[in-house]
Length: 171
Image 1 (tube, rainbow, N blue to C red):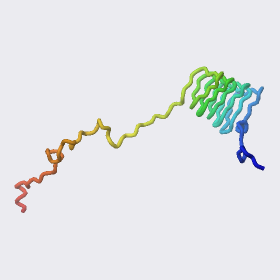
Image 2: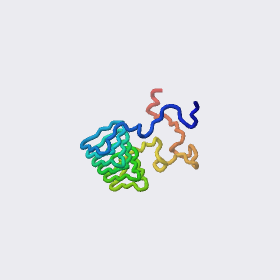
Image 3: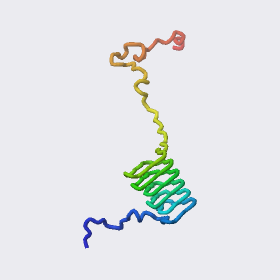
Image 4: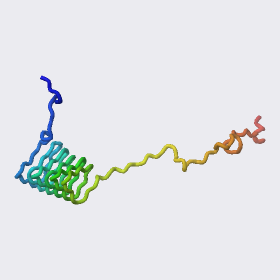
C-alpha cells in the first residue's frame, strides 16, 4: 500500500543501461560501433571500439586496440589508445596501458594506469577586444583635476575671429 523510502516510477540499475554484451569466453577481432548504447566487454576484443555512450570492461575483459567512448570504466585490462570525452574510471582490479586522452580521471586504490595521460586539447579562447582602452593605453586627460576649463588653447571654448577683409566687400 505505502512504499516509504522508495521512489515512485520505474528505476534503472547500471546493468539496465548496458544494451550490448560481449560475454566471457568470446573473442572479437575487428571494429565495434556501439552508438549511444552501453557496451560491456567480458571477453576479448582485438580491434577498435567506438561508442557514444559508456563502455565497461569487466574483470574478465581484455581490450587490445583503440577505444573511443563518452565514458569508460575499466575493471579488466585495456591496452592501446584510449580517448574518452568524459570520465575514465579505473577500478581496483583495472589495468590501463597505452596513450590515454580523457576529460577526467578516477583511479581506485589498486587500479593501474601506465603510459601517457593528457587532457584533450582545449579550444583557444580569443580575448575580446575591449571597447575602452586599458588605462596605460589611454590618451592623457586634457582636463585633469588641476586644469581649469578655458585656461589654455587646447580644450578651451572656441574663439570667434573677425572675418577676413576680403570677405567684407560682399556686405
